Image: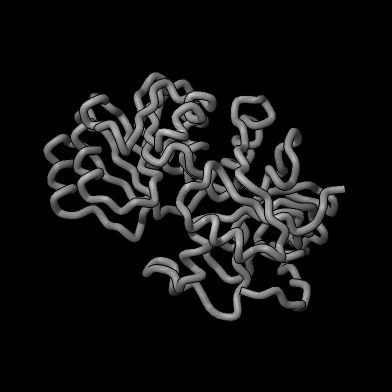
Length: 309
């Protein structure tokens, strides 16, 4: 990766041009940098600008844009999984990929929300059909997606179990988990049962964990995984079938504008906190990716593109 001077993007008729203040860093960024997986490869071409989290100010609007005006403070997911990303001073994207950013947080914090927030929302509410009073088990609960899933589920009245490493258990309690499990030293399958939704937000591709997750589901429960490049095996599908349960991989198109508006409201109401692990200047993007590859980031890493005024 290197920084280059390129032409400023020109917004199409249904695009907004965003003056980017900050960009979030996600695990998918490093996956794309390494060549992508079967889902991503058809959408990628070089040279490309990485980054699928943006927070900034609308600089210009296309002729057909009705939802925003110049000067609006916005956050969203530009063009995922395409090539015109947010590790840049400006990005152009469809207006329906953005929403007005939460008023109570900075651009740096807002950049830590969009992609992981949308994945968490889609996973637990759209695919998992989570309802108030239900029980949800979240794997990888201290990461970017998992920490939002814990908070969203709790805000909507669910009973939340979260798995993480020992050093993150207190953190999970602080953000609302009802019960926490040390995945290295405790066996979750012996501690929980009758779970309505298991949401696997962990980066680990672990067949045995999936089978144990099916074990703790109640009949007609739902197992949701963010790892779309790790399909459910025949063994897992058979185990789900025996419980009349469903397995879901997060493929679907996301309702960006509406969900981002709901998330912004939860943040501004104080029901959801944005957890930022570290902020890097754009010039240190390589170091940021090395940190991301440790798999031990609590919350999100953020690139500061320009200082907030």
